[in-house]
Length: 86
Image (cartoon, rainbow, N blue to C red; front, side, top):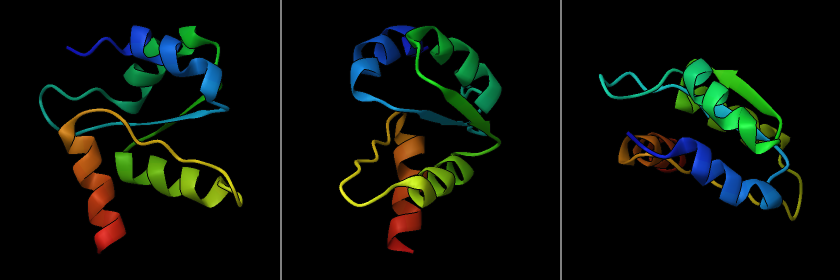
């Protein structure tokens, strides 16, 4: 129910890549579904089966001075917060 295409279009000038991870909830999108909707923004998109896998890959690729933005639903942010606090 979220405006993925519009959201990605607004963020695109600030992004170098998108790592799309799926959520298991009934309303959640798979990584593939999310990537398909995000690709119109013109930013490279890679898919992952879970938010956790997407975050871990993105974090591994970040260098000094890079910014990693996590966005999506509360479930997305909760999954990443659990990794950071765990």
